Figure 1 (cartoon, one colour):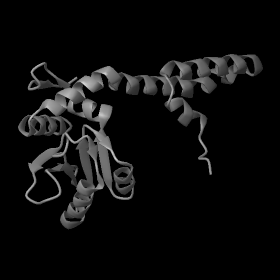
Figure 2 (spheres, one colour; figure 1 turned 30 degrees about the vertical axis):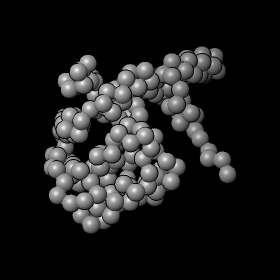
Figure 3 (cartoon, one colour; figure 1 turned 60 degrees about the vertical axis):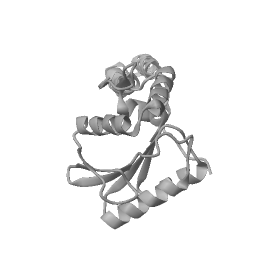
Figure 4 (cartoon, one colour; figure 1 turned 180 degrees about the vertical axis):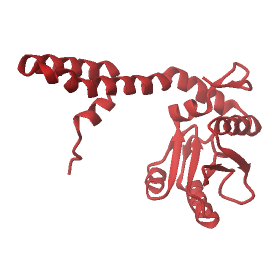
Length: 192
């Protein structure tokens, strides 16, 4: 059965200027029919366009994402883990190295603990095994949720498993955005 979608959810997946265009068209039509309400009919679309534009500015291009992922794969564990820890600390998380199995770090923010698994960031395809270990660690340590970072692809079974558990998989452009820009040496990290 097809999932029903609203006009706003459809516009969220399109470029920002399409929302502006819809708002202008709605303003024009309403201006002809009942002028006093025309600005109020267009306002939600203008606000939506601003939000979509802001989100699209924060997303990196596919070419930049590919270059960053290539640089990530070339890093040693020490370099990669330092970049990941720095990224989460900039977001306000307290980061503590793992003392147990199934995860590499415990991230704490606002009283909630997220277990982070990122040791297998270089694999070409992430399978379900590391996610099962992470799920067991979440249960064992009574964490709020888990996150797994991977620069490669994710198998269908792994995605299905993560969808049934409180686990988020970060890969591709999302991982490149999370970690930030890499200097040519692959060692110099800074915020975008």
